[in-house]
Image (cartoon, rainbow, N blue to C red; front, side, top):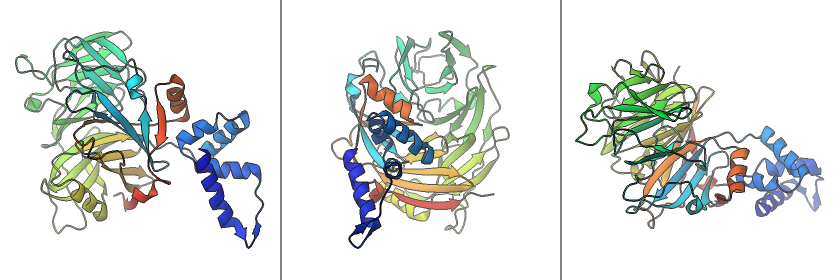
Length: 419
């Protein structure tokens, strides 16, 4: 933190020097100027200096709040499934951070012959493992707290898992010998009990796994989308029943195309309170664009609200060719787009004030040494309290890995949302 502060101070002196004479700077103004330009991790250290510094940190957060959600990546050994490293992108400061001490967490499940590998829910910061004897899950930002409960009644390999308020739903993903491949169970955290629910619609029979379906959830409702066919339906957590099926009509209207191309893959999520779909336009071997649509939560009507700028589409195409799969993580007004097999390049879109603000960053910690790893992703709002709790527990330590302000690998474009 001290090095960062000195660098900012030196830059300010250079900017305000007139000849050999420096402009006088009040101490409180100087502190505010420095603190508003530090990363959230540095602010945690600054807040521990003294009461005065803690007050200055609070002031800087009011001036420059750090509310943009972090994108967090966990790397697991490709054979043992054990955690090898973890890193995060903080869009407020445009920096990548390494997360240390992940091996010293007593509550995180250790993979074994009877324990499933670590997985993540598509659209939430929910991590989980499921086995024949135990179901473990965590949904705090840095996954410090884990819930270990009895396994679902029906054994599953790749189920759809989603959190709906104080309940966790587990659907599909069953083995071949199970009579009902669409079976749904829901765990109530408050009562500690599993409940059977209405099975998934029959049209999902051939795709009832987390590999083919994406989810978006509120406190009481789950939306399920088949990524290729764009079939969608919803689940009501109160009645434990499914609504009617519908087919999303996604029309690509990218300006650089003579005629609309088909959407060959789509993923659903929530950006703030808006149900959105991100779609890859063109073909697997010939990506033409990436579009964002808002979906009416009752009628399922879609309207285009943004499209990735052509310059960024070209970066995505070159980084992942052919682009056969895409994952999306959403939180707040942010949408992160990435290839789950190779998260070296991430793309993101911020929906704010009628605009789509696009960005791109290169993860400096993904390299040839860990390219064979399996990756698990989450996206979560991170506040000072979350970082302080993580550091105080002794189970997390953070270091900034990207150089400077991280701007060398950050690109920003804007495209107007449709009206």
